[in-house]
Amino acid sequence: MTEIKGIYVPDEYKLSSVEKLQAYKNNPVIHSDKQKDSVRNSIETYGFMVPILCKEENGEIADGHLRLEVGEEFGMPKVPWTSVDHLSDAEIKGLRIAMQKTAYDGEFEDEELASELDELDDMDFDLELTGFEEDEIGEVLDNGAEEDVEHESLTEQFVVPPMSILDTRLGYWLSRKNEWLSLGIKSEVGRDDTLLGNKSREGYGGDYDLEKGESAWGGKGTSIFDPVLTEISYKWFCPDSGSILDSFAGGSVRGIVAGYLGYEYDGVELREEQVKANRPQADKILDDRDLVSWQVGDAKDVKELAGKSYDYLFSCPPYYDLEEYSDLDNELSAIESYEDFKQNYFEIIERSVDLLKDNRFATFVVGDIRDDDGFYRNFVSDTIAGFRQAGMELYNEAILITAYGSLPIRVGRQFNAKRKLGKTHQNVLTFYKGDPDKIKGNYTEIDVEELMNEEKDNQVDE
Image (cartoon, rainbow, N blue to C red):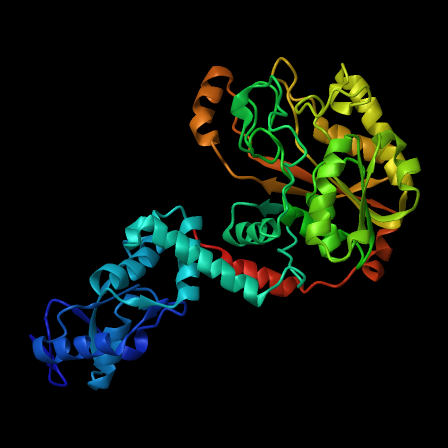
């Protein structure tokens, strides 16, 4: 035994000066007075028998913040420690929480605990290894989300770093999505929950149909648009309080998000029942219902239906025959051949672009689709060609990573049968009409450096 300032320390432990040990800055643990008294009495009576666990390279503590504090109280210039470098970052985070939960039966700072559990979830760590039961984990994460809502309302500026990968699986994205949905947005209302028709039912949940393509956004076989993608698209590419045209309006998401953020929105939708389902949601959620309008009609008649010029085009077109929206004669998704579909699609793009003001953006969210033999139709490139024909050039392309859903279960059969990869992304194509040198004067400046720093803080080394 070694004696340091009257405290016994086992000889087998390494010693480190207290200055070299670093507290974990996001430590969620609360040290109660009872815990402090217990640790103080134990060290004084039995010696420093439990070393501090930390990373060797930088001295960051995994477990032992309170033991270090007590050692400093006793005036110990050095304290025993042992390395946890054999553990991954996720395992160290889990250990820190598990020790407080199981070994000490201690308390936590709610917000920091929610943040740590959220990060562990993103790292695919089994959260129950922290000592929390499943219902406790849900309660902690829900409470953390509620506190976020209190600190940042939906009307405040929200953007993610403007990079070409948009990951809908990340914690902050999911939290934001839940905030939007909590308003009462129900985009699936007014739509058949079996829009995939006689396509393979295994396309559900946002995953790709094995034979024909994909269920683009998931949910009971019916595509649901992402409100967070909608929000950032408006804030990135539409001038403040600008006007938005949606030529393939569909459900309520894009209209309600626009109105909530103070943009004018005109959507063209072929099916009257869908428009009737959208309007009550807008009436209930929006303070200014006049900002949002859905017109019943054919997208080819967009010029007559809309009747004005716009600051931004934003839409998600039908993916040919992947989803069967209606049996109406002018239903674009019911056109017999892909070539006829493409011709009509190009006409709608051109007429929509005619309504777009100069020096403005247009964004279409698309994904490729397979033909009857399993080959891709090249729908993404066809969309680009349609906009070029209408006088707009591709300016940005982003990849939207979507949730795996049941794909990991199905992809083995899909791959072994026909060597098809499991596809979990969409293409977000943004075009520009006019002189790029005039962009800066038309759009709000965003503090990109701050956003990048926030993103860096959220990233975890693999």
